[in-house]
Length: 270
Ligand SMILES: NC(=O)c1ccc[n+]([C@@H]2O[C@H](COP(=O)([O-])OP(=O)(O)OC[C@H]3O[C@@H](n4cnc5c(N)ncnc54)[C@H](OP(=O)(O)O)[C@@H]3O)[C@@H](O)[C@H]2O)c1
Image (cartoon, rainbow, N blue to C red; front, side, top):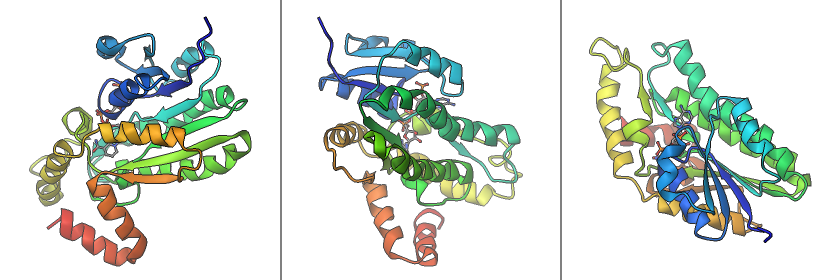
């Protein structure tokens, strides 16, 4: 029998937004390839419609290898990502390259391999960015700039792929309760030591961030939004989701940079 379900490919599915989106789309009639470095973590939700794939977005060959066996991709969700927390002067070169290797070059690698599989019949690419792709915070310069870069990728790719019927969107979540703060915030040891000149910022910001992420919105909201974007051909380019994103992103649009900076400092640094 011919399987004519739409094909979805999501990266970073072992936890959080990736995992719940894979499940949600699979239960809504899509065939989902759930990419992960740890596909065994998806065995409990594996089905005919949800296929775990071993994949490392830092390795183009591993992405290509999976796609060689797939005829077409209708929807790509670039979800995998993590956050490096440290001051610019203290973070090592290795740590800073790693942040961009995953959050930015990982997206390029996956897009490079997927676009040829999407170009003939069109499709949708959804980049999971962050409200921190529009708002800077101290000690998050590398994460912030990786997400700002992702915003640029969305803007340029939208033009580049429009002639082929491919829509590109950015989702900018506020804080959501996932594994992000528990496992995927990578802290720089020097910045977090008692000797660091940044220790006061660490002591104000770090507990707030962790508390806000762990008590953040429910990740199912992101999965539901992704389904809406897939279905609505006229969906806007970029969408904020979650309390913090809906609070700060409109503010950024109406205030001057300096006024906005004051608001962010009042909220996160005092
Ligand atoms: N939670 C929030 O508050 C929040 C807010 C704004 C934006 N976001 C963004 O949302 C996306 C999903 O995060 P989440 O909140 O669902 O967190 P999560 O539960 O920690 O999931 C992140 C996923 O990214 C992948 N990943 C993490 N580090 C990686 C690395 N070094 N190399 C390759 N893949 C890596 C992992 O996938 P595998 O283990 O399966 O490979 C992991 O499952 C991320 O891009 C994040 O930046 C999160």
